[in-house]
Length: 100
Image 1 (spheres, rainbow, N blue to C red):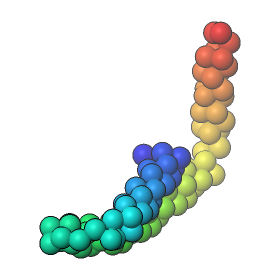
Image 2: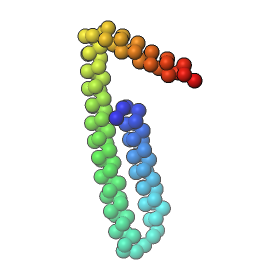
Image 3: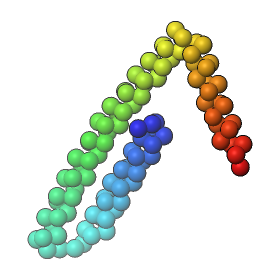
Image 4: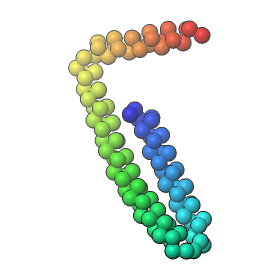
């Protein structure tokens, strides 16, 4: 997963958790044994989800930093390869944009 899609995924999960909490607050006045049980389970799942998300987000960021460091190291050791790759990507993008 690239960094942009990872950030979007994390953002979407945060929105989902916020919406679930809003739903819990909206149904706070509802009573009944079954509803109370469902609310308690949902609250527990939301808390677990937030903890898991925080841990995964940290792991994703660590992996991204490692990949960045590895790429920078490779490009320092092989600068002409980096130039060739950039030129190739530029050529392909130029051809794609020229197609109309």
